Image (cartoon, rainbow over all chains, first blue to last red; front, side, top):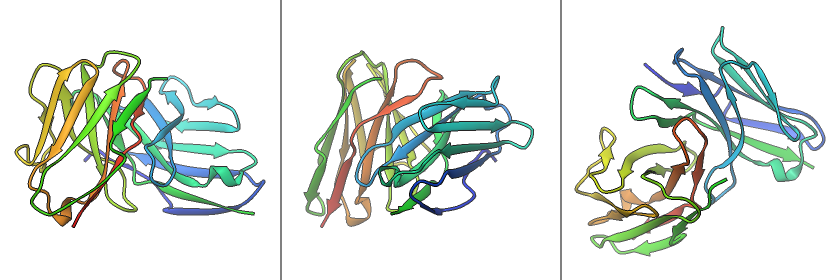
Length: 113
Length: 115
């Protein structure tokens, strides 16, 4: 079946280190992927996206890597800060059904001071 | 990005009563809005797609008579949880897309607690 899943439910990193959050997807037809950040009690916030014609995209302190061969997506956060502590979700559009957004399970990022 | 306003942010209601949650698209007209439910430490699960001027499309397993959706204008969709029970307690979130195949913008979410 179609699914988007995350490898690790919780990631704990030291402040200043780099963080890598992973995501595996199974729908080979997916061509647009998004990373969201959700802080406690709030709605998801867009971080960065990538389309399937790219394998890397960089933003401010964040980089998304896409490996279509193994259907793997990752989010890299450079110089992780306490404000980065949140749950991170990867998501993709399911074009087979009115373009709804499918979310992965989420990874909790904990930044230790 | 788009600005999506959701109200109320938090509501407590008694079992058996109904609760209405509003989702407003403040800076563009949204023909489609999406409603999600999120239980603690879980991901967002799509409940239904709200379509302006027509019936909502519900995901499998979501009771349409229990979760009433109205999308009467291009800027407002409402979700009414009817005859709420404690198991309906959850975080409800709406979203809009400016265009298909672009990122979704989310409301602040509504924490519903049914006692």
